[in-house]
Length: 295
Image (cartoon, rainbow, N blue to C red; front, side, top):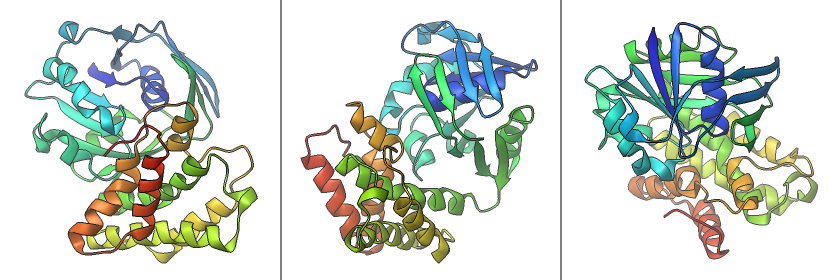
């Protein structure tokens, strides 16, 4: 029996946990702030339910084989009490978060060789604790190697497609290029498609081109088509759609992952001497809007 603890049963963590529970060879524990009776996820294949063990007190946790961290990037330090009880000398920690700095954010808590960065594309929204709607089948990418291969194996009996990649860095940066334009609807509070214009296209293109330039400086392989896809997705964004989690978080009055999505482009651009005026401008404007923001 492989033991797994999932820290953060939100839309992503809850969906991942619910799928993993379907495999009887896996023993899943949910680590949450508040009690949770069960999980119910509406997936493209139908509804799945689960009643995993739920802990709300880190002191009651015991070492496991795997920890899957699915918190927001600004909540890294809140995982320390859990990791202190869940992680033993054999435990590996998978970081299922946005951005491209997974290992850097957790290396002060867990030895880097036991950290597994995870790029996930899993459109899901939580309507209430334990109640989630998964709108499309999920995709997971991890670095090639033993840790990555072992993590992929955990998802063999799920409908989440997990694969190990020799060039994981590019996988992470390509996703960030697609996500960086979400700061526009988060700032304007409306979908980009219905208000599309040449000026708006220049903003979205600038965001994506800056991200691609910084990613390439970091060593990622990012085709020009990635930028074009980001522009096309923004152009076709339907009325009433949210531009991803930061848009939804602002609508809900929640804290947003601006640093992991756009601030990192500015910071690493400065490191490489690459100008990122469009990302810098929108990050500054969103901060000035009075919305919750992470420096």
